[in-house]
Image 1 (cartoon, rainbow, N blue to C red):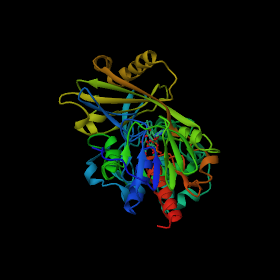
Image 2 (tube, rainbow, N blue to C red; image 1 turned 60 degrees about the vertical axis):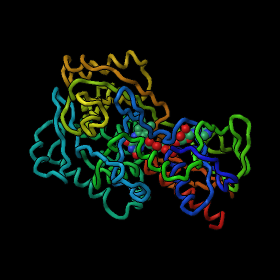
Image 3 (spheres, rainbow, N blue to C red; image 1 turned 90 degrees about the vertical axis):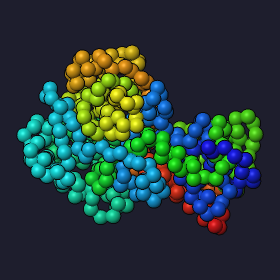
Image 4 (spheres, protein in one colour; image 1 turned 180 degrees about the horizontal axis):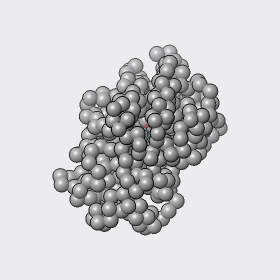
Length: 422
Ligand SMILES: Cc1cc2nc3c(=O)[nH]c(=O)nc-3n(C[C@H](O)[C@H](O)[C@H](O)COP(=O)(O)OP(=O)(O)OC[C@H]3O[C@@H](n4cnc5c(N)ncnc54)[C@H](O)[C@@H]3O)c2cc1C
């Protein structure tokens, strides 16, 4: 679908067809710049891809798209993605029961009904409203310039009870940031919370990879070349693995952060968080409805579970369910991990149900997300223009999210266009 004649004499070479590279190429094409997008892998999308596997759709690690993402709204045709939303709130495993936590701002009556469950008290419900108010005030851009603390400090300063913190807030934000200590900057927490509060967490009906595919299909045929790893970037040139050198007026490095730091002199390699995802096929969904189910006990190894086929039926063949269990980090060997995950989830959903599950695939992703400590988000939008003719984009330039990747791609394109006088 992306094949075609190579672009001759490209004005700009973009290296890496993840969301940042795709957004960059798209913006350049809109200004009628001749772009060549070089991708090392066999398809676009980078960290946002979906594989068809025995009739199931497996995203490469559990991810969600937040419908309030501002750059996503600008760049994507959300309607064409047929987004399927999760319920706002979560189900939480705590004290030997699955308990339901709803967003008190959206469902105030239901939230009151859940008050006496040992997840949070009335004060906590009010603090959620306060967090909503705090994160939602002012312009969205203001969030990136507020005083920073760690997310844990921020939540503690708001006065949340230990029960609320451990049963809900920690596993919830740990699932977003991919780290349990919650050392991520409070700027990121406010951004993410605002996104959850003003929109929905969702997945495209046919998998997260549809986001990248939508961007890729907007590019003229021949723009995107697959199986073309770039090994060197210098001046206005790139060298390909087979030794060929290509030249352009500008080069944009849109690879993952580790590769970028190898290709670009002086580009620091950010710390990355790891995650592991186990996909199970089941004859029955263990929970009904599009819920995120959290480990409110903190025993692990699974931090959260989503029954993807309850969010979008296309994720599983008829009559089967697809369960995605996410474990933070990537330390245990797969056999041990599966056994421990099954033992934990047997407590939640019953051992006879879990023993009928079949492991479809384990995704171990050691470099899933750049860490977002205070020292990084101190400068919320890091430079994308390295020198005239050389640019960089990716989630490591803005914030560690789909929206951050898309934003950085657009910013890099704008810098190129300025230098090209377009
Ligand atoms: C498991 C997981 C869960 C996540 N959850 C969420 C979530 O719920 N919500 C959210 O908003 N974000 C989430 N994210 C983050 C989001 O997916 C990333 O921030 C975003 O996809 C990064 O895009 P990118 O274009 O910057 O980088 P990448 O996706 O890494 O793209 C880089 C591209 O460059 C290519 N490349 C690398 N080296 C070369 C080379 N030498 N030559 C040519 N090409 C090269 C790669 O193959 C890749 O296609 C998650 C990420 C993971 C992995």
